[in-house]
Image (cartoon, helix red, strand yellow):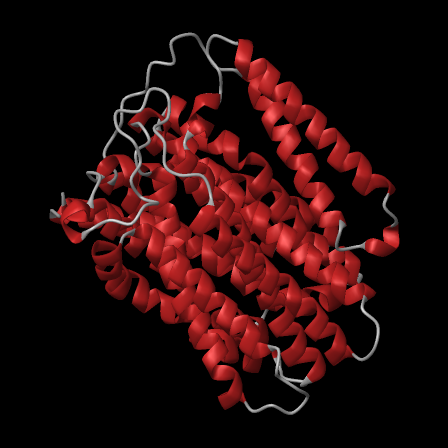
Length: 470
């Protein structure tokens, strides 16, 4: 790659690193924020839920607007919004202010992230060069999340508001560099305007469905509004499909979902993310509530998962070239299942040495699965739909993460017996989730060209080294 191409890639990696570190640091700071702002435990959980709700709810719209209105334009605009509202969160004096700020920050990330991914998938030629760029990108995202756990603990020990102000400084640097290094793109010809009805339908549907999932975390509130949210979300989704089938210029071309490889990649991403984030919640619960570890000790304990930041750009590209995406993704799913199974034997006084294999296996699993799933979800998709493909993928990741967290929380709340028994019962959720992910990867729908594609996707089939290098 040319120096300018490397510069562009580093800027985009900086943005996804920013998104990962922002979420991870806030996770660690929530108990301190709750105490300082006088919020209830249920109230402070909405600080995270508001972000997830907006992120998943607007992601599909964000990906498509990048295709229609310009990727660079959308990336810079929403990075600016991210910067502003992250800073406003740091000045919050009441809980509702912080929740509003996090909702807008999540919405800005939903537009910024698929725009950044589609800049990579359209800026690098399909094949080994794009694969390496995507794996480097995925490793940076994972590294941001892993390092954010530790940095968040350090900053919270000083002042929790730094958790919001540090991303502002980082975002400002990335914004300045992106303005100089990301090439200008011409505004695509939409050929008939923006599908406003479709945009409202899909965004409303995603918001309601994710809200229903988030409400699963609060079983004591009763099932009424949860059922209403799911019913409303499904009704809007059906209405959206009906509108897209009839409109001349749909927001989402439904034919893209005829790609078996794309559908399999998104289902795998949803199940893998759900299992991973569900396990992370359980691990934090175990270390802090059962073992009595401090926030900083917990952060350092989970740091071994950050091995994926090193493995993803170094080991994974070689494995993909040698074995193809399918086998590498499946290997990641199996490694995650082994990690969760090992943790089932943990008791109330297990040493960290005994926990370490689980953390290391999870780092390996993330390195093997996350990047290749990104490749698989965008391979073979036409350039003018790369933003949509990225939006679909990140929607799957976020929806899966919300579902995994909510299911684990509900199981912990309803489990009988001791805290340790509840922890072991909840651990079955990520184990089953990743097992389903492995089954989808191995036996899901096979690759099939999307209508209008120039060539069929090849990411989710075994490939020889010669095929991967062609």
